[in-house]
Length: 186
Image (cartoon, rainbow, N blue to C red; front, side, top):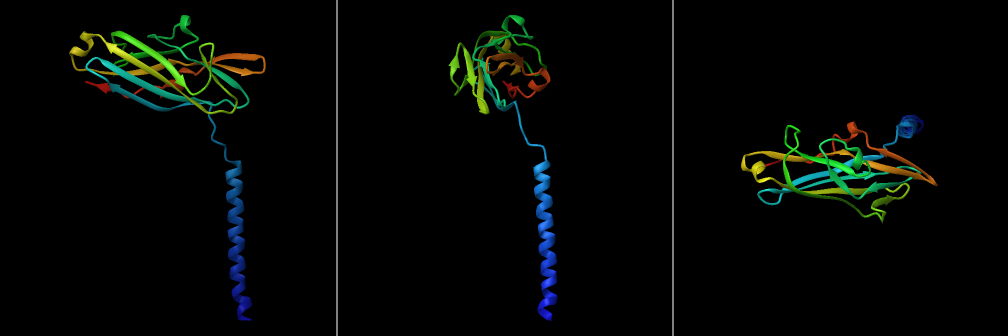
């Protein structure tokens, strides 16, 4: 009889454990899945010599059920410029957000994806990283005094492709707040 009495707490504990397990499975099944279409994964900035800086922003795109194309070319603009709407647009700014005087600058977007007609081609359901590299040589007057500089992206266009349909779009400005490098101070 003693063995029957001790079996009830064991059965009760198993029932509680099973109920807890079912509740946890239900919670995780109903919880919204973490998904993204685009985000930034890494940003860096380094001073190469007294007046030259390297900036880098890495980002990724992933569109379910659609291929996408992304610019290979990038253009420095203080504000979004219609003439460069098909290119990544960025600016080199000081800590207060004002454009700095740049003597020479070069930029390119690199990725492991195929390049077709000056655009990176991302395939459906493929989370691919792309990196904007900017090398900027500031004017001598700009680096004569102590200062700081960073690079921010303010236009990131892309094209969504499904069959023969193409839809041109861009990352909304408020979503680009994290597409900024750290500040470099000299």
